[in-house]
Image (cartoon, rainbow, N blue to C red; front, side, top):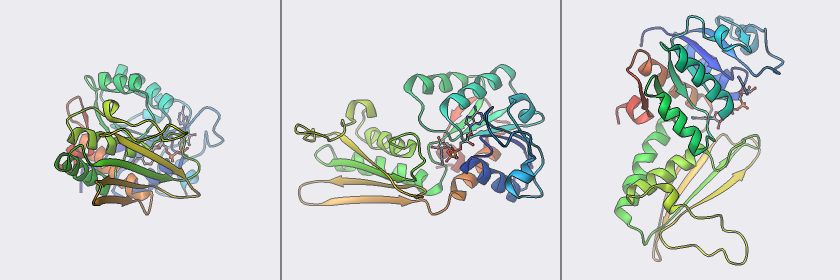
Length: 269
Ligand code: NAD
């Protein structure tokens, strides 16, 4: 078991925030506090009350400093604007590592995170599950081995509340596929197929998105030649898988030198 950490959670009342509290406690850590949006009805409640976990310490606050007091790691599953606000505050303060699970950043926002990683140790992943981390490597390998005459299509399904599309995981898998072909994803990404002139361009990587009920997260990468196809699929069956991966990342990153790290680094893959 890793040394016990004092962890701050941004977006603590969210679907992932609540899972993170349970996973942190299950792995023997304590909580310095949690931050929520100014307008949240949960401001001022104890984390124990919010989550129904009597062992949880700390309270829900709209103030970064209150949530951060005494923390060594900040875990953030919110929205891009909230993550960037926290990132800039923590970069000015120092001494705290970050685990970022939020998705949907623009390229400019991604660059701001990379720049902050010259001063902070950050683990960032669009998906903290072991299965998807392994899947990325398999996709990179298949894409390199199969060559550009094979079409690549990535499809994802998520619950109806998800804001960004395609998912951060689908984009990560697209980057792995493009990497296998020695190009950045922006150079190979297909426009959505829609309308009378929507034929697939050779060598491109296509994305399709479904939003359906309570689906936690399903991803499929299909490779297709004229005579055969190959499919690689991942399904998240429980949100706790992301939370346990994120706490594992927190244990790994606490006290590390500045840098932008991935789940490959955390898992030693
Ligand atoms: P959610 O909407 O249930 O939770 C987000 C929480 O952030 C909400 O409680 C919201 O009030 C809070 N928030 C918004 N603005 C805030 C602010 N300024 N300060 C503090 N809190 C603020 O969403 P979710 O399903 O928990 O997902 C959150 C993010 O994590 C999304 O970007 C999602 O795509 C991503 N996600 C990543 C992984 C992964 O493994 N990397 C897994 C699941 C979800």
